[in-house]
Amino acid sequence: MKMTNTLVALATLVIAAATVADDGREDNKYLGQLSANPYDADSVSNPYGVGSPYDANSINNPYGTYGSPYSNKSVSNPYATEAPKLYDDDGNYRGRLSSNPYDAESVSNPYGKYGSQYSADSINNPYGAGNPYRADSPTNPYGKGIGIYDSESDGPDVDDEPAVTITTPEQPAEAPEPVYTFGWPETNDE
Image (cartoon, rainbow, N blue to C red; front, side, top):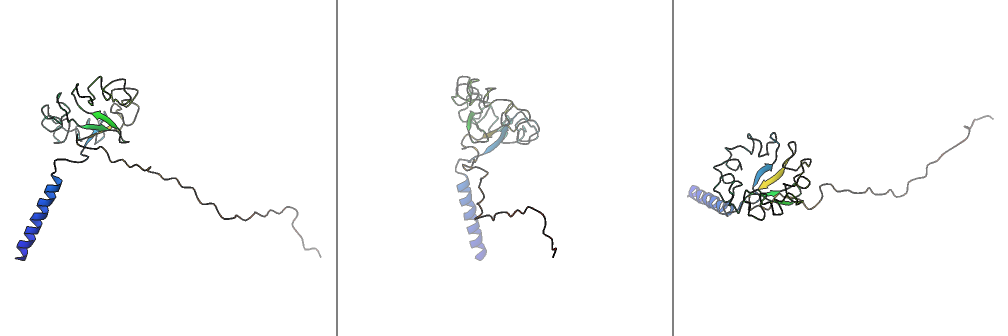
């Protein structure tokens, strides 16, 4: 009887956890870094890291959710409306990594804010977010790149507070005045 109650409680706990976890949304699902760096494990240009065509969550997997030409969440579907989102290290939204040229938020839309080569927010602007000398630029072959997140994600968890807090030391109450003596040393000539 005791064993049965334990199994029922355990089964109830597993079902409750599955129900909470399977709400249809995976918050902040990180898919890697859009980067030209082939040596970074988080770069989609690394075929042995997150860029592997065998990884289920890779944008390079033609049979996966994010790489299939038929998935609505895919970077390679020219009709996708829920393609992955791009965020820089500061949490700034940089558009959708999509091949859809008609989506207003797509990096492939040459007239959109995130696809135009003249927009400061576009990764296609070599003087803006796509500057190859920036560490978070996707075109920098030695840089980190820009983060790719699931379409339902809110992007990276960025703290609103600065990482370093600057404090000033407390002033001492009253420092004693230094004593300076000048002249010849005293001698005991009596």
